[in-house]
Length: 188
Image (tube, rainbow, N blue to C red; front, side, top):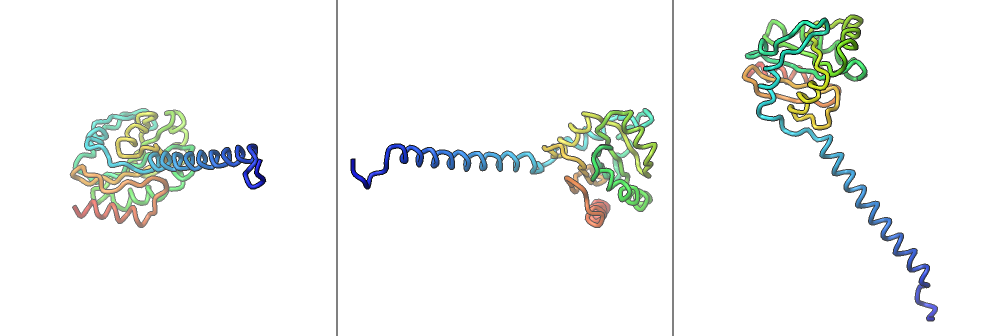
């Protein structure tokens, strides 16, 4: 055997290393693609607002809230859960927004995606100045209809008085930006 030719064992090792690197690159690429698809917001379904406005969901006390009453008004919808720290952190800001914009025809609704008793306990301890409703799994599906494919929380949607989605925010919102989206909805 010629001394310059690689040994069969060394050659096999090199092939295995090249194959392992190729597999790792393919796996990383596939993982990146899956993450991109899951975390990227998709356009809201054309009928998402209609589905939302057709809902009758209970408040934390169990009383029905008809979303049809929000038709023709600017609506800020916030999907949240009591176990979600960023959701809880932004609730005081949503309360201020609800108070500041109420006279201008803006409503804020928090759609809780947890068990009714958990949301009722939370609402009793931390009252807010906007409407809370209990949606459990329906809330996740509503959120998905608005383009939240990862069903991450919090998820905030601003809808103008004509039923058009102005903006969607996945994760904790910035107060200044959310107010600018609401102002845009009011100017339409």
